[in-house]
Every structure is written in structure tokens, then in C-alpha cells.
Image (cartoon, rainbow, N blue to C red):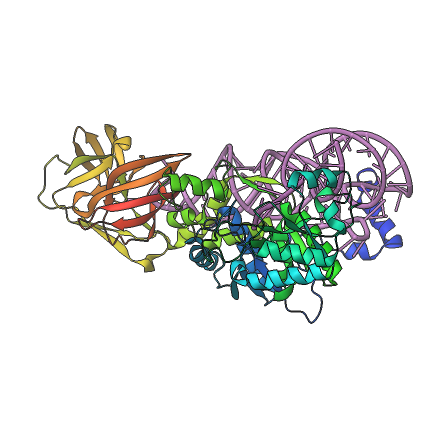
Length: 512
RNA sequence: GCUCCUGUGGUGUAGUUCGGUCCAUCAUACCGGGUUUUCAUCCCGGCGACCCGGGUUCAAAUCCCGGCAGGAGCACCA
């Protein structure tokens, strides 16, 4: 910096002479929200989120939901939920995933998609489009094996199928769709420049034969489009203006652009995000999770050890925290590693104000309160504690102390002086806690506790890496409702999963 | 190997288009302090970065060239 050597005044003087506008420039501030899209005027913004329904959504997918739906909100545009379910073999669709994804989309984004479509129900359109492109000589049927073609492609050579006449291609095409050719026996390719520097783009495959039945539409179709073709045709039909997706799909954009050029269509504006690794989870793919779930390694897609949207939701994450998180990351193409803590920190701030406080005693130990002079009393009366320290309007919890039986956690038990939160300074000796003073006198450590008249058995599952811990204890049973997220005193957030007929409470740990 | 993308504190992120009040934004983490009858929330303060090397220029995070590093694609998956 010039200013280092000559001082700011000097810089200012030079600027005054050469570039006076720079003097008025504002100091940089952090941009808030998503970067602007380029909008061609008169066009409504149309985006899409296109998952494969081979399982419900993972945390990674939630980025696509958030970014696309937020852009739709920002520009009063539309967002389409499109199921890219044209693979019946490698990543076959899971029937239950369609409705789960649709529901998760709405939960994550806070809005319903403007349109939901399934590629598998629009097969006629794709097959017709393919046939037309074959007729026009834009595509051709290639009967080489994959490895034969790869060898030719790498040396920029045309295969013998490439030069065949259109009539022959149509005949082969009819055989393909008629089921007369086995899987792998033929493929439809888009005719590109073989000199393209990127080998992946040369005469890329558009449709292939699959004789495996599709879980939804059965075995009506023998030829299925690949992602690049299906998506290219569908984006055009739906008038998609902006595609925002992971940068692993950059080559897909290039393939599709080549096709759009041949068809003289306008390719949507495309933006990318980089790869994200969540440090607290290992390498998971939807396929691998599905395998483990079906194998019984996990209790389900919402097992708290899994990086699925279902698991986050079950634990009590707010969808708002997910939205804030992804919006803040924005559209950087950098590959990044993120600790779950950064999502948790957002979540804490959001849910803290609505989370009532309750006392949960892990590993309870019973104590008996005695009066200042060591006497047992029949009735110690009651105390009232706020449900939330900052919001008195949320009401109070009234504890009946009865004859003075309470629980504290074994972890907190120690003989000596201690403050029972919101109640009294006591001296613990054996199984008794002698009241020294109801007033808080000095800086004794404070522990939480519960009156045995106001508590009930509870257990809480906590996921730790790939393990599940089951913690048992007693929870304060004032107005505990299933589905509610609580802040457990001195512990952190947990959600009430259910309450059994006997009143026993089952909790699931959220985070600290 | 080929093709492509990306490099700003511990982790993320703004600023890079169009060089200049940028000795670099904000958050999180961490450290210290305050509020609080929770180890939560909240408030204040601190810490800490332009991948490296050249070049252009009065002036480079920003432009150019060359390295290096990380990642993705090179599927008849999405």
C-alpha cells in the first residue's frame, strides 16, 4: 500500500487529482443475502430443484432447496421440484421418497414448490424429442460397446455408427424402444465436434436401454434418457431461466449447451456451488445410506446419526437455521469443510427464545430436605420458576416441594455447600440437604434439581459419532408435550419425542 | 494422464467485474470481561488472513505471466 510509505494524506492528494470518485467510495460492507442473478428483462425467473428420489433428502440436498427457493422468493419467480427418476438400475427410485421429498422441500423452504413433475411420467415427451433429433441428424444410434466407444473417443475418432444414414438410425431406434436390443447393446448419442478438448463431451450419450422395471411406471419403456438429455429437454419445456447447482455438474452444463446450440435454444444462466463436507459426518451418499437403512444398520432415514434432513428435523432443528446457513455460504465455488457447530450456533439463537426451560436429572440421586435446624417438615410449600428467564409472559412452572424429597444428578452430588437453583443454599451430607438459607448468599456453585412431586421418568437418546447413547433420568413433568423443543437446564436443547401411556417421557438430544 | 473449477485468519464469508480512504467485511471458533439463581441466551473487548514467485502501475486482494496446492468430471449414475 502506498499509504504505508507516504501516509493517507498523500494518497488522498493523488486521488483528488486522478480519481476523485474513489474518495467517495464507501468502505466495504459484507454483502447480505444471495448475490444478484442476471435477469434478462421481461423474463420471470424460473428455477428448479431436481433430486433423484432414490431416498429422502440429505443435508447436502437442502442447499439446493434453499438456494433455488430463496432465489424464487427474491425475484417473485417460480421454483419447480422435478424428480429426475430415469435411472432404474444404478440408483433406482424409492417409491416412498417422492412424497417425503415433496414434504421436506416444503419444510426446508417454507413454501410449496410451484410445480412438481416426475421425469418418469413424461417419458413420451423425451422419446419423441429423441426421435425427432435422430431424424434431424442431431443424434444417432451407436451400437458400439462402452469400452469400444471410449477408446475411439479418447483418440478423437468417429465410430462406424456415426456415419450411418438417418433411415438406418430410425430402424435401430425402433428396435431399441421395441425392446429388441439388450441393455448395453445400443445408445443414442448427440453428434458433437470430436475435436472438443474435453473428452467427456465428445458425442455424449443421451439415452440408453434399461430393461429393469421402473418402480413407478413399470416396464413400459425400454429406452430411458440420461440426466443430461432429460434435463436439457425439460428445462427448455418448462422455460427454466436459471440453473443453480453443484459444480460437479459443470460438464453437464457443457453437454447440454452443445445440444441447445444444435437446437438453437437458449441455455439458462447457470450458477454453481462447490462441494461441502460436513466434518461431523463421514462420507455418505444417498445410495450408501439407503443400503445401510435397508440393512437395518440404522433405525430409519431419521436415525440421528445420519446426515439426512429427516434426522435434523427429528432432532428439532429449525428450518430457518438451514436457510440462514446456506444463504450465508452463498454460491462460492470453493470446496469447503464445515463443522455442524456452525449450523447449531444458528439454530440455538433461533430456538432459544421459544424453548421453555425444564430440569432433566441425568442419573438421579434422591435427597431429603431438612430445615435450618435439621428438622423434617411435613410440607415445604411450593416455588415458582419462569418457563423462560427472559420472557415472563410465557408463564411459570410451579413446583410442589411436598415433604422435601428431591432429585439431583449423581454427577453433581458432592458433600458440602451448594445452591439448589431458584431455591436455597444447602449443605449436603449423606442423603440429606439441610437448608442454610433461602436467599442466595454467596457464590456457591449452582446445580439444577427437581422435586419428586413434579417429575417423571425420562430417557434421552444422544448420537455420538456413530454410536447412540441412551441416557436415563427424571424430567420435570410440568406441561411436557410431545414434539416440543426444550432447553434442559445446564445441558442444552432436546426435543420431546413422545410420552408413553404411563407418562414416561422420551427425549432426543439436539445440541448444546 | 486429459478437461475443468477454486485458492482471503482455525473454520466460513464480503470485497476481485471497473486497481485507490482495504494497515481488508461479517459470522463462527477461541481468549478475556459483563449480564444471568442454567454450563443456555444476551452484551463488550481481544485474537487472527489476501497460496507462492515474477511483471504492469504513482498505487495490486483486485490486472498479466509462471508455479504450487485442493477439488470435480473423464459412467450406457444423478
